[in-house]
Image 1 (cartoon, rainbow, N blue to C red):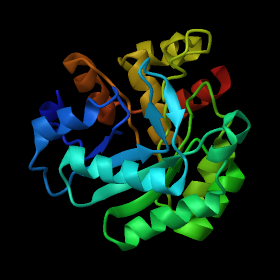
Image 2: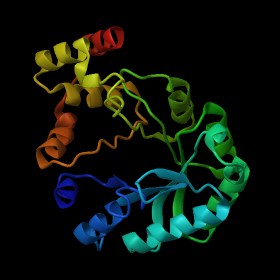
Image 3: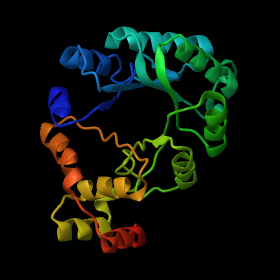
Image 4: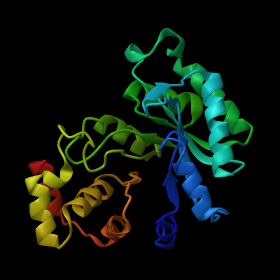
Length: 250
């Protein structure tokens, strides 16, 4: 499926050593190495996984460096296209993991200066943190939750647009958690999908691309048919009427 994604024109893959854990990078390397020249590998650091698969914070500068270098090793590259700092709620962190953002970005900027990172990004960040990241690290992207049914991060999205920074929404079709709304269950989405001859998921993704021109999608999938359906959103055209109906109905 990774090879098919590249065949279909995908030139940006979002991964992390802690995805799996310790699985995603190995699969990417096995399927695609040596990588196409135009393929950007984007990773994430700031956490590790415990024996039960839970996420454990790894926010100290030395831990960030170790994680970046582990991603380099497992992907078998000399430089990563982008590395995102995965921030965590400081109120939920043990004292030794409550690291000032400037210290974290100082380490990431050092990794960039050493040629190990081409671009620095931030994930799960507030507006103030994104502003600081722009000023201190010259970030190239932000990964936050955003979808048609969850637009709480609109201020950050617009800040990124104004600064020429890619905005990479995770949960682009709504949260993966059962109790939170899904784009594909939304009545307006389903009505527009039927009218334009697309699936509700395609409409939800096409809305994101139409919503702001700095949006970069990373919808995940484990099925070939789903991958090819996602790629066909390039052919989904939403009219002004469709967009207005979606904005009103979500």
